[in-house]
Image 1 (cartoon, rainbow, N blue to C red):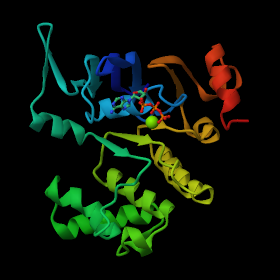
Image 2: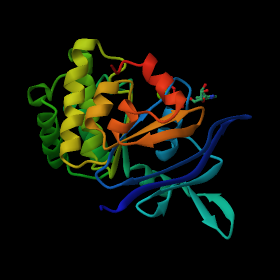
Image 3: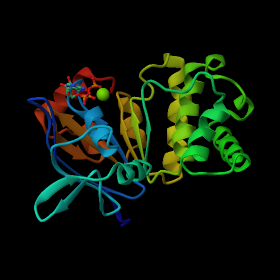
Length: 256
Ligand SMILES: Nc1ncnc2c1ncn2[C@@H]1O[C@H](COP(=O)(O)OP(=O)(O)OP(=O)(O)O)[C@@H](O)[C@H]1O
Ligand SMILES: [Mg+2]
């Protein structure tokens, strides 16, 4: 079995007095593709944002490659790491969102090059060839010098994914990357994710595309009201749900 990449123990997150993650436990191995499903407000996005330290969390631990993310745990005292450490740790994960968040005044290639040059301190010509390589991989070799406004939603999302992957993260986080797309553009983005999965990229993906989750995942996690309610192989989860809640959820979802 491959080694443990991500370990989440007792993760708790509050917004004010409202607890939205109520003790999440999850272990993920290198090369796994895990889909997170669950109804709106169950805490899926919040979980991804905690892993990426876009959100602070109040309890539990997140460990990535055996390193505590965000907080030190010394002698039972919990202390936030330095901003420098957090920035370094954030670069271990790449994230793609529902909204692509490309810079509109930069071309596809420039969007991808930005982090390589600014964060990785890569020379521009080298960054350009990395950008071109990834644009080619997502089927957009001919669009390198196009601005986001000149690209379709599906193409923009593929650039956004290429931008995250180009940074060589250890773990990719996808949050409903197809939800803002017209139905005819969903397939091309899912195909890119499929390709990354085939390459052995470790991925956590929140999705409402149940058929896709079924096909691409090595494991599926069902979240409900801030906890993992059920998890297992896609086949067990979708065909033979153990909990009433998952069975109910699947009835109202697009899987059939
Ligand atoms: N910035 C915030 N301030 C206060 N509450 C928030 C904030 N962000 C999220 N929440 C609340 O936290 C809970 C979990 O939200 P989250 O976005 O993680 O859900 P989700 O499972 O991703 O839902 P969806 O499927 O709609 O994207 C919800 O009740 C939401 O209202
Ligand atoms: Mg969400």
